[in-house]
Amino acid sequence: MPALAYIGLGANLGAARETVHAALRDLAAEPHIEIEKVARLYSSAPIDSSGPNYVNTVASIRTSLNPQQLLACLQKIEQWHGRERPYINAPRTLDLDLLLYDDMTLESPTLTIPHPRMHLRAFVLQPLHDIAGNIRLAQGYVETLLELCQDQSLLPMA
Image (cartoon, rainbow, N blue to C red; front, side, top):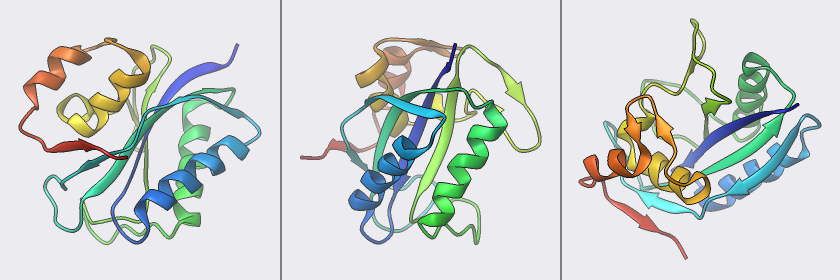
């Protein structure tokens, strides 16, 4: 049975909204990925960085890829969209994060599941809540965690 995974998508350089939509199409075109749900788009200010506001969303997918294969696929799509990594938290054309993969916990040099900072980020928690309800993360329920980061500006996009 395919695994259920959640992917965070974000961009703040170039045509960010269009890039996020294109990345969703790229994910859907992958042979071992089926998109189940996509949250609405949100706009958020950069955290620990500078640059324009981000466009963010979260998608739930079903995949037969293992976590490392899925990470490689996400990084390939980032590269297609001109992702560069000049420094930590640099503005980006596209950021794809593997947030959750079934109930798996994994720590490796290249991948940590669940994503280590997702519980601190309204731009992840709100769209995750939109498509997955009040699911429980290791740190608590999404609604409770979202209340703890209300100081982060997050606006739904039309």
